[in-house]
Amino acid sequence: MKKLYFFALSLYATTAFAQTDALKALVAKKADAMQPKLVTWRRDLHEHPELGNQETRTAGIIAAHLKALGLEVKTGVAKTGVVGLLKGGKPGPVVALRADMDGLPVTERVDVPFASKVKTTYNNAEVGVMHACGHDTHVAMLMGVAEVLSSMKADLHGTVKFIFQPAEEGAPFGEEGGAELMVKEGVLQNPKVDAIFGLHINAQTEVGKITYRPGGTMAAVNDLQITVKGRQAHGAYPWSSIDPVVVSAQIINNLQTIVSRNLNVTENAGVVTIGAINGGNRSNIIPEQVVMLGTIRALSAADEKMMIERVKIIATKTAEAAGATAEVKIPLSVHYPVTYNDPTLTEKMLPTLQATAGAANLVLKPPVTGAEDFSFYQEKVPGLFFFLGGMPKGQDPLKTAAHHTPDFYIDESGFSLGVKALCNLTLDYMAGKGK
Image (cartoon, rainbow, N blue to C red; front, side, top):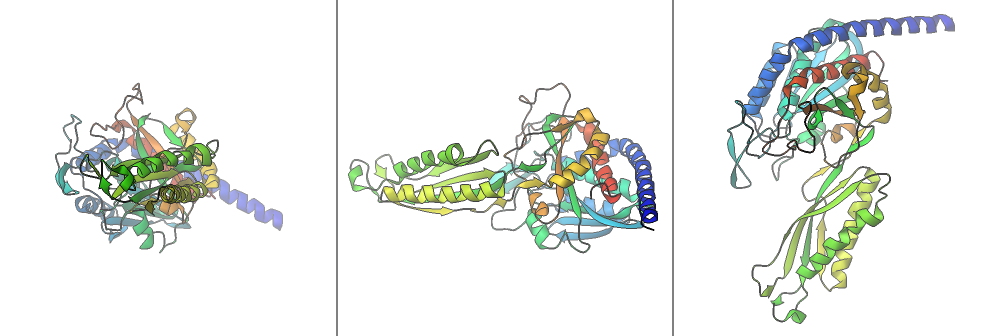
């Protein structure tokens, strides 16, 4: 009886995989055919970018598209987010796919017909708005994935939850937003998500390639504020002061020992950066206080905890040694956990990415100290986040414009590969290859 059971199970699995392979062949055909449509969507979104928690036009386009495909659609999730639910014709797991929607306060310099001319007020200053990180491409590709998978709804072994997320770059000061708020509002529940996949376009990776890393792939981020308080005095009589400027300089120097002396750099990288220091207003007045702003980046939860503790101890004790005080706030306003690719899930899904992009085009990458709030989903369910090439072939990645800059540029020819990758990951996971 046991042999018969395992034979039946093996036959079922073989049949399911064969059906999945047939669907993936259809995915390839449909994704290639919709490449012009992906470019059209992307260019429209690029020309009309919106900042975090303000993506009303973008959300309207997405919601209309998902409704036209027959999906169950929720709007207003985490302020402007959109969630579409595609229920397959057969029972199976729930797979979530995510794209972020927001632009950045950057004035575009790229000479393309669809360049953004949008202006807005940000931090009390007029600025341009630009999709300077490629979120417009993410939205276009996930809209394409929704269209492809909807066309084979009857053959899907499970449910797909399409998450279009606002404010990945951070909510406006004083507001909640992004993945953290989506999770808080239950986006991974009803139905409960079993696994989540996401991609990010990369302007320094050649088009046609996919890069990935198991474990910590992007850093945890915490912004920080250190307020050093001393005693004000005339600049000609420094012995009457407790000089917060000198103390701040000592703190900045001492903070550099965290990475060089406390972090095991053979295991993970890390960053402690002070990006702003403000104090005083005259050359001959020693001020009463100095305020510093900075960021901490870590690639494991243990490193993150250690680095935060060391910043606090170094700042307070350095100040104390000089007779001053230091107040440390970590995080000040932003905290993202490590973007952590579940190692088991990553290993199981690598054959899918290899078959989709070609083995030579799937590249193991070093971790990066940039951050991504996709990490909030990965705290709750196993997730895989990978990078899709967007650099024109033959260019030098060291000379191409970086993300978050006015000259950021994406080669659009790789969009169909992104659609194929997300579709195939979904199909293979549903067929049991990711479990």
